[in-house]
Length: 395
Image (cartoon, rainbow, N blue to C red):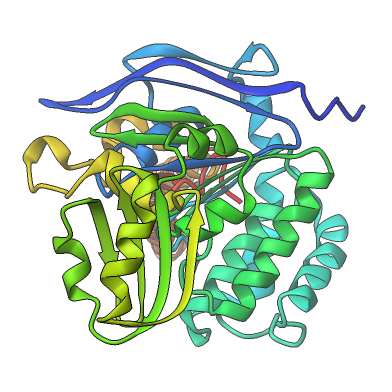
């Protein structure tokens, strides 16, 4: 049953996660509704990725509560979540279609059901005839498209995207924006974390800005911009605008080659500003506007400082990944154990004979060696996938 657009999908209350002496997330709370596009923002190391991985149950929180439709996380919820991690999580030596179908199988989709949808998405992303190619043959932008397809294929009810526009050129950024708008209309809850403030400004209903593990700004985007007033002036000009930052009535100035965004101490000083500009710059545009989200971001967060407390751990501790519980690892281990037992049985039987022959045990030993290699390979693959978010809610 399709639920109301305003119905709450995800609720995070007082989330806390600490790594050794670093508090990566400290008391973060947020709510995401169905049919909403939610922006999770913050500077590097702010705690965004740790928040996402904790929400997805990839790592366990030290404190706080996370609910989906008023229920705590359960294994069944893997199949209603789509996750695009910031890091590449694809099998580079595998064929594109096989990779997509593999991630679809992790979400409970059969190959027969997933394959036609995979081809539809490949065509949508301009990769219609590329399914037979290996992942490593693609550009970074096209690899990003494959990760997006893996996240979208099973039609998730909650879609979490960490830097989804990374590697995409302007044309494909517009394509992704259109796709996200379509998915939103299907009552899907969408969270995306990005440094591209212009994308957030165009797309998001609500935002949450995290800095040093804490929420410093949140709410509907329109209210956030209204809170910061209308003391901003945008200029387009010809000439040298470096002097703009030195004017006494300018609180803050972002000056570029032929463009500037100024925040005045008092908006009534626009006449004084115009007088200063008249003799120094050739104006093409003078506009009083709401402050951009980028300027609000800089105003709230400030200039980043290098500090050990501002470093977000890039990877979850391995003990939280539960690699040994993965069914693929268990299956490989079971095959190895059975092989060892069969080898021991055949060897013992031959030793009891007057003229023992070790041909069969030798062949079985070779099979055991191969099973051991497969076990190590499977364990390494699953460990990597879980660390990148692909072993659980990925795809």
